[in-house]
Amino acid sequence: MNTPAPALTRTLDELRATFAGRRVFVTGHTGFKGGWLCLWLQRLGATVAGYALEPPTEPNLFTLAGVGDGMQSTIADIRDSERLAAAIAAFRPEIVFHLAAQPLVRYSYDDPVGTYATNVMGTVHLLDALRRVDSVRAAVIVSSDKCYDNPSNRDSDAPFREGDPMGGDDPYSSSKGCTELVVQSYRHSFFHPERYAAHGLALASARAGNVIGGGDWARDRLIPDLVMAFHAGQPAIVRNPAGVRPWQHVLEPLYGYLLLADRLYRHGPAYGEGWNFGPNDDDALPVAKIAAALAAAWGEGARWQVPEGSAATAAAPHEAHILRLDCRKAKSRLGWRPACPLEQGLARVVAWYRAYHTGADLRALCLAQIAEHEQAVLDQGRSSP
Image (cartoon, rainbow, N blue to C red; front, side):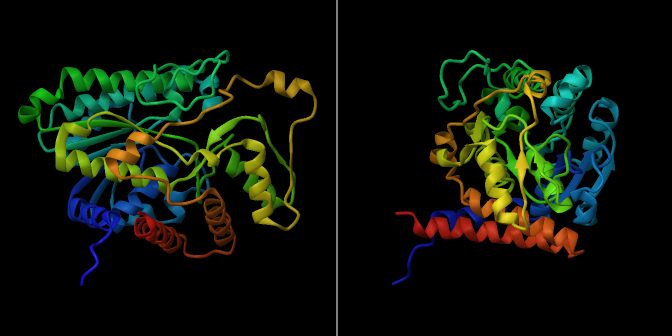
């Protein structure tokens, strides 16, 4: 008697069938999440084209892992609407992932105009370009968990659900709330489900929490700051140690984005909504616990500390204290759920940066970690009732 294949096995097979040979356009491909996504798409057999600025840091994942070796790459600004439209028209993509963004809360205080121009108008430029091509069947606009209205006086730490109000006090969070409103407007005005037969494009947004993984060197981001300090043998400085964030390995939400694009491509506007992708509740932890766990995993006397004195805290710009996501919709309708516990994710981080410092083949390591995550998804499916 043959045992039926687990549902998640069929899902992975469907992903391969959907993306193999498909033309996929990715904005932000030179960034941390974009680079990992492009490597996964290449593994799935997609024909990938990217559009982004030069890698935002040195060193960077895009260069070290040879992300550009398996794809077309256009180095340009998402704020250049004409060049973006020309790149899309020339490539004629079938699936689009929009990840290009100014991704840092603290930097948004230094450059609010640039943050809004990139995150809001960059999305407008992309969606308007998609209006003018007839090849695209699925588009996933990657937003952020910080798109939700989360004022400092919020009297609840309940997880945010997809229907909660958009907002944000700092420029970055506000820009992501605006991004979601732009997606909603374009979906209603130009890609309405009732007119799907005419335009043929299904549009969704994806909201993920704080991601960790190898190849991230962004400024003012916890894991890069910790790793750089640990490698240098110095104590890492940790701001906002009590802040609670939904931590997850970068491959967790990326698998969700791939599933969402697959459903949009196969089933159209039935999946054209906003979607949360976050960790299990026990992995929504204070910054201090993440710092302690990574220090323990790193070993070699790794340590961290908070800034001295109240002045450091007083000078820090406002950031949301508690962020949690309710991901029941993605679990029930997409069949997605976390497959990498935080402890395992931190182990992957340590392995990646240790490999970097020893000169290992980082493209091969990234692809191996992607394969490991796919296996974790399969194992998860076999263990499900």
